Length: 391
Image (cartoon, rainbow, N blue to C red; front, side, top):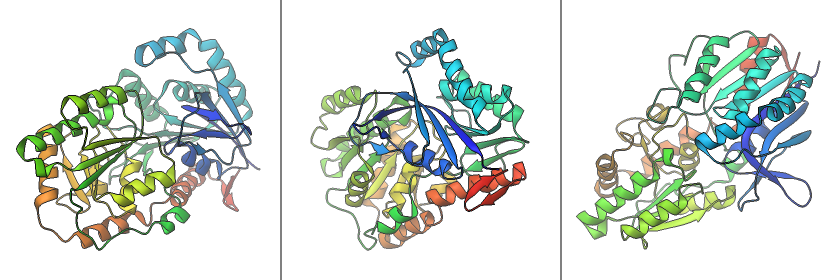
């Protein structure tokens, strides 16, 4: 029997003039990859304003747009609670028609989708994308979501945590890596392996400009390097957009880093690849993370990654300069020291870049979807026919 999938997400998406839907980041690529495992997919998303650099969402039989909650943080939660009958009614209508429900959590709308799927006893794929380990950014909603996943894991409920490790995240749960790299895209990337560093050194950050991503810490670290020695200051390109953009721009101006920091805004995959191709080192200073897709995007281009020791960073990047360098989250001095050492310490850059690229080869979107499909097939005791899950 063919299986019908319903995906419930809070991600903002928008249609173009032809009615095709777009979003940003790795979301459109990942939901399309999950949809490829099923014969019919309905996507429930939040409708938002059109943005530059959008990526088309493929493989959906239908897209249902929900009204966007108002505000952010507490105000947003109040908005969702106030309109709970509206959100719950639409989600329940489509979940009831589906055989399988997929929710990328955490998030208010997908959490509601998960609870409705549990009540209606639907097969469920819940994928937790933030840090499974408690951090300074962990909220009560995060804790509640993780508690539900632990409690209901097993049987018809496939519970996945984004990360990597020897021990499972919880009983009857499994780790899954995260990526936005397709095999064709990876094969088109020709990293410049046999090179050292540019002068000045070029850094790149890729991701949302929000407080939990730690970009303010990175800017402070550059200011610290500038105070030590002007020649140490690298060029930094920030690829992405988000609610902290204006604050970060003001911080850059106040610290006199206007000539050293470029805000590139939202980029599609081609533009992101171009920025990574020009860079020497990727910096991802998140305060909380599960498994950053940007780590793999960077390493596909032969870029070592300087990142906070959060989530799966130690497993992916390694210690001792294996594929980059790790620092405590939120520590300006440690990040500045790591960047200083990366810039000034002689090393075999070609070998380092080769190790980065080699790590990514087996971690494509196709491999990611296949892993999720295999977990579902085994746990639900069903078949995979022509790349599709069949009951």
